[in-house]
Image (cartoon, rainbow, N blue to C red):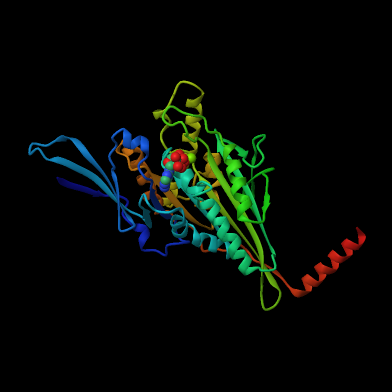
Length: 384
Ligand code: ADP
Ligand code: MG
């Protein structure tokens, strides 16, 4: 067997500071499904050393020496998760340090990228038995807040929204499409979006699963559970930290994003309504790839405005934010093209620089202010 490995996505990202200065990129391989096994699929992805990914293809033709040719590509990522990796390990490696960053008053985001059926929703949301990154992050966040502000001086607000067909919808309170607004202080926000104040991770599990059933999941030809919508969970954290004099109020934002399937719309039904939806999904994901390209090339103008998704991800990709991307892939050779595409973009994303070391402004509350505040509060209570 000839080994003909081409090295893909060389590691320019590896020399610099890592977390906080560029997007951290992880690859997660899911187990072969029953269906794939039954149809005689072979595995075309191999993971080594917890970070090397080999994508191989046994070419059908044999050469003149009757040797089968093994063609392939080699990629290196910040970490690569084999198909038996637990949800907890994925969370600990890819997102736990971002929860820490949010508690230090910074913004962070994690997004899953990959074809339909590659394991994005399993990774992000998971099931009640196998909690995904969204829920594990909230569990961790509440546990850490309890340690750091034991008097309960913290607020956690959740929003869960979807971009479907270039329309933004509230998954916690489905209704009319929401309008995006840009605000110099908060960046891009969706007007009228529900902000749910959460008190524990347990209540959040149900909330997110309920929200997820509100996602638009039209069956398509290539996969019945296909999801054409992008789901974004935003977690806003505010808490006060005691200082020698007074306190500081820290504010951080964590965004957790389950992207729609990255496969091309061409692979599905082009005739009816779905081709329109496909075009729009493509628009959001195409816009995402143009933004990634522009960011990698250090362009001055980044076309965030080209789609709703990129508008919403603006501060995750280009701003003061620490970002992790989890690229999900199937092991099956029947998904070779999609896997290659996913690994290509994932390798490219490693080159995106961010300004994740910048913290949000802290608000200092001096003792005088607090006295003043409690006086005011007392007065208000009397008046009521
Ligand atoms: P996507 O959201 O990318 O379309 P899903 O997360 O829905 O894909 O995964 C497709 C199927 O594969 C689901 O049935 C899911 O339970 C299963 N699956 C995905 N990843 C894993 C994994 N790491 N371990 C076990 N099953 C998985
Ligand atoms: Mg999904």
